[in-house]
Amino acid sequence: MAYTMGINLSHDRSVALVHDGEVIVAIEEERLDRIKHSEGFLVQGHFERLTKTLPMKAVTYCLDVAGIGIDDLDLVVGNRPLGDGGIRRILRELPIRDKTKVREFPVPSHHLAHAATTYYSSPFDDAAILVVDQAGSRFPGSSLIEKHTVLTGTGLDIRSVAATTYPADYSDLSLGLFYDFFTTKLNFVTRFGTPGFGVFGCGGYPEAGKTMGLAPYGRPRPDWGEWLRLDGLDVRVSQEELQDIWKSLYAAEGAGYEPRVPRSWDHPFARDIARKAQDELERAMLHLADQACQLTGQRNLCLAGGITLNSVTNQRIRAEGPFAQVFIPGPAGDSGNAVGAALYGWHTLLNGTRRTRMRSAALGRAYPEADVTEALRHPGFDGQLTARRAGTREVAELLSQHYVVGWFSGRSEMGPRALGHRSILADPRHPGVRDYLNEEVKHREPFRPYAPSVLAERVSEWFSFTGESPFMLLVPHVREDRRDQVSAITHVDGTARVQTVDAGTDPVYHELISHFYDITGVPLVLNTSFNDNGEPIVETPLHALCTFSRTRIDYLYLDGWLVSKVDATALPPGHPHLTPLDPAAAAPPSSVSQGR
Image (cartoon, rainbow, N blue to C red; front, side):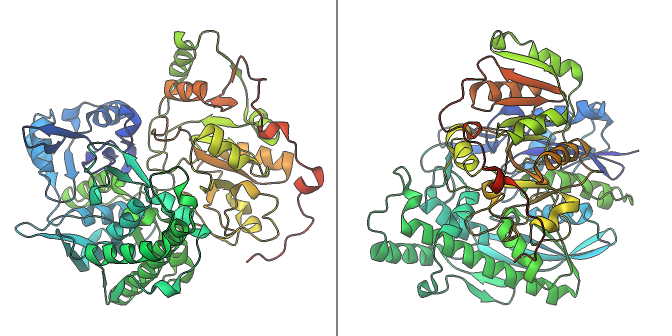
């Protein structure tokens, strides 16, 4: 009956707790300290030396959920990329009496942590594992850093097959750094720290998802040549080469483009840069998938690393790559390495044999009724909010009337995607919903798409897709005969980042969407994360009420309570409820034809 704790000390610091092979709880520190990405840096001394702090809020959270104390842990395994001293910090700062319980991965460690996350969570007994991210571990005594790695998983054993590295001077770059280079040039950056902090001196954290979202608005540019050199398992480009490419293209086509002015992304040059960066990334990842297949001879593939949050690339690997099946865990980025560390500790260090497939990313805690009612009684909401008990059918009715609903249900999700536990929901049929959400609710760029959560048993009727996508990490096409019906979730290129919702895994969310299907004939809802621009996804009932009260979300479903604002009838101009759908346009088609 062993408890193994994993601690991720990279960006998106996080903690996971495994009990006899099952992940019983996992949480990112940002959900608790409310600092986006929660890097955890402290500045020390006259030379501004950066050091990491432990995600102690997440440690306490996981122990509380399990109902154990820190000395009840059998093992603690930590990880951080580069030369980090992470284990020394855990040994020094974690208040566990028996320090021999604190262990680490063999060096290099970071890609092995990613591999453990995806393989041990997968349904496969044998698989190729491909890890691609921005920065892996630095090899001791050298300037070389893990770039991308191919491994195999067989039974409970993970071993490295082949790997590439890049030097710290950026005379060669990882694929994550390649994509971040252009993301920072487009000024898609979450600001934190000093102006020169972060990769390429961007002053923050590159928001690669925005580059991915903008890419379909750009034109294919074969005339710009190929930016990445594919050489066996390696993919090569230097920072100097990218700087030269940028300067040359900017001089030729960037007139009028200024990245720091409002709506700079709407310049044709910016759109084409995003498209080209995305096209090059997809070409490289398909190449690496082919290499992984050739090197391992496996038919199953497990993907992990920050690049695998690029769901468009994942879709192409699944649809066009050489593998029969592909698995990507919900927390595929660095936050998920807490899960990998804990599972590695269980399987490799404690020789545990029990494996449990990750079917849901809802690995946080569920809040008891007392916490919900206490939050509802918070004096800060006096006279502003009303609440009563309500069921999912009533929420579906509100969605069908084009209201925006905050949705707080059960355990919180691990990873960057809201998957029907901490979500904002809306009617996917209404053509004005996307702009309203972007402008009035989420306060973000209007080119960014929204995702559908669809009944798993209906997905092939609406999308060119069969199988599972529970973690919203695949982007198939919306069937051509359905696009006009669900315009709010259909991106400019006819795609959507799909989440399939299974009744056995997510019964409450499935019930809600089923009611919406009964009412509208559409078996899906628009789903986005429950947060405002620049803040982490809400975690607690009080977080949900605070975000609800200060945004233009119309209603909040809070674990069986329906919360509304006293002035709920005062809708702003342009609200989707004020512009009902044409009944003929909203009606489902009489037959289903083969989609693209």
